Amino acid sequence: MTRARADQRTGERGFTLIETIVALALMGLLLSALASITAQWLPSWNRGLDRIQRSELIGIALERIGADLAAAEFVAANRDSHKPLFDGSELSVMFVRTSVGPNAGPGLDVVRLGETRDRGEFVTVRTQTRFTPLADGVSLSEQVHLGSPVVLLRAPYRLSFAYAGADRAWRSAWKDADRLPAMIRLTVRDAASQRVLSVSTIAPVHVQIPSDCTKPDGNCGDKQSSGSPTDQGKT
Image 1 (tube, rainbow, N blue to C red):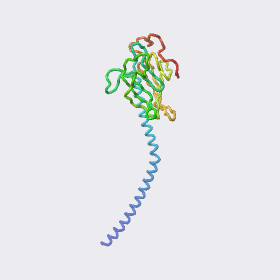
Image 2: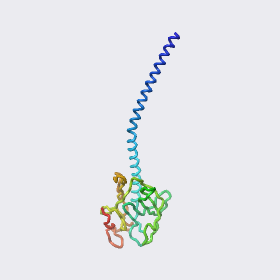
Image 3: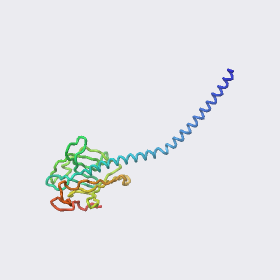
Image 4: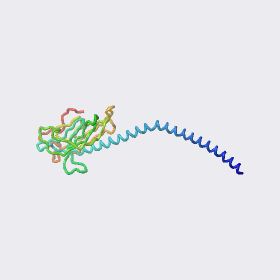
């Protein structure tokens, strides 16, 4: 009985070894198939995830820029001026808004949104400083010293601005106007392909005239005018 049982166990050991070898071979085939599928699928998945993440970051940046522009105030550079402090070009815009931030007190800030170079690349940066009355005949760059930079967009994406008044005609610049633009178009392009991204949007400006202006047409300056800059750069 003992010898028979020993022979049976010996046969079982051999059969178990064969099963183990077959199982390992099948596992190897399965892992090879999974590795092949993953090698083809994972890069595409990563690229799709990267695109989604970039779109979300760009969307957040545009939301912040739009909120800044919507809060622009009609504030003159000094008491002798009747025009708002607003300097808009295709690649940057400077304006006055109420102070915002965890440590901001009551008051106004001069905010600039625009491109600058960082390590040889173009980046869109938000800078600001406290607003104080400015002297006539001196450029803004000489009087306004901006700080607290915050990077909003990095390469390869570039942001451009366009401005429209009540006539809804788009212009590439808005300077020395009697009122603020009614809306500002934010266009994001891929610098490599010049492709316009679908997240590009339009930011409305809530205030275009002084708060003490009671005229229906909004022309409360010394001279009646259309309130818009010249047609240069009109699109």
